Length: 123
Image (tube, rainbow, N blue to C red):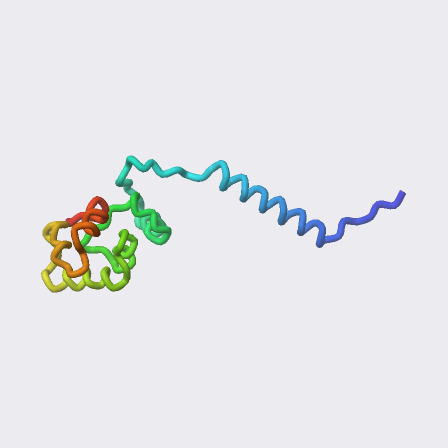
């Protein structure tokens, strides 16, 4: 009885399915959950960049005196223009002394301020 060799294409397809299956199982069973009651976690700079890119705002507090435009844009209701307004205000006044100063920026009213206040601080 002659054995037929396995074609390399079949082997590659089988390995691809195996890899995809492992990736699927890993994401289904090992996804970290975020505790919504916690508002602050301490992370390394590398992890902080990842959190900001993915927009997980409830995990990060943003310092109004050092935040980049991209970091400010993570906040609810803060787009590119408003982030630049915050940075311009910070540069014009020499920095924030209180989070409440955000109300002095045109375009930030009580409602928007209420939404972002838990996620910002001044240092």
